[in-house]
Structure formats: structure tokens, C-alpha cells
Length: 192
Figure 1 (cartoon, one colour):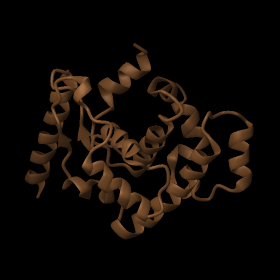
Figure 2 (tube, one colour):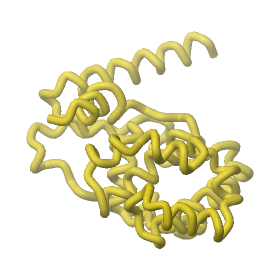
Figure 3 (cartoon, rainbow, N blue to C red):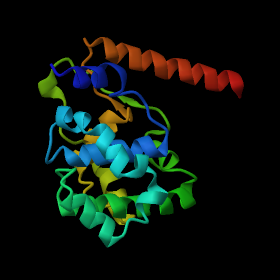
Figure 4 (tube, helix red, strand yellow):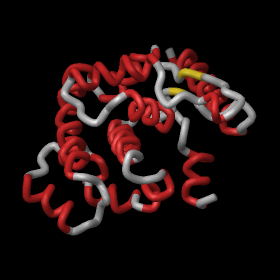
């Protein structure tokens, strides 16, 4: 197994993310899965962050045609023009969502009542490519102007961002992610 991918699985995948920049990053990575594998994406992560201004939606929304052309010509990314344009358009849509909901995070987490979904599948073959919840989120994102956010992309994003815990039930991370969520709930109720 690729060490970067193993580290991503063991430390990040399935852990709830609330930071808008990191959420945009994971959305971009989930979209890129149509063209690349997780290990390939993770090996290019620093390049992605540099080229997309650390996934700052305000900055990306200002990308010009010249900037997009330079991203394609320089060959730094293996993403199609459609995906590059979707990243810029999605950054613009995130800015609108931030105005309406306060943050992209608040918008997303409201779909699951601010608590990660837990599946607890035993076998990898049981993990779906998409779910009814992903279809609802996908439809809402599209209505808000997001692109390249079909239900399969959205479900992959939900998994990576910890909106759903799809670690297999026998995986040590399944239980760790659940314990972290329970601890966060207790901390929130104690501070209220």
C-alpha cells in the first residue's frame, strides 16, 4: 500500500471536517477521482494546494481565463478543462453559500443534523457508490450552481470529509472516528 494513502486513511479519511478550505479541497479531490486514483491525488496534494491558493474559495473565484490556461498549459495537473472550470465555478458557489449559511461547512453539515452518519459495513462490497442522502445533497448543490457534483462524487466527498463514516466495522478507524464524534458531542454539551 502507498504510504501517503495509508496515512490518509489512518489519519484523515472519515474524520469530520468543518473548515471550508479543507472541504473545498476534498470536494476537488473527490471530483478528480474520475481521472486519478487516491494515491495519485495525494502525491499531487501540495501541487494542488499551491496551484489553487490553498483552496481559498475567494481567491479561486477570481481566477481569470489566463490563469486557467496557465494551469492547463503548464501541465501541472492532469485535470480536464471541464474540471478546472468546475473548481472555479464551485468556489464562486461556495462564496454564495457562505453568505447564506455563514459557511460551506454549516450548509453541508445541516444535511446530517450536524452529526456524521455511521454505516458500519462489514465488507467493502457492501459500501455503496452513492446513497439517497448523497443524491439529495448532489441535487441541492447543482441547484446552487455547483458542477461535477453527481451523487457518486458527493458520496465520495461525504466519506472523505467524515460526513459519513464508511470505515469497515472491523477497521480500527471506524471505532476511533465514532469515539471522536462522541467526545466532541460531550464537549459541546458541557460548554453549552
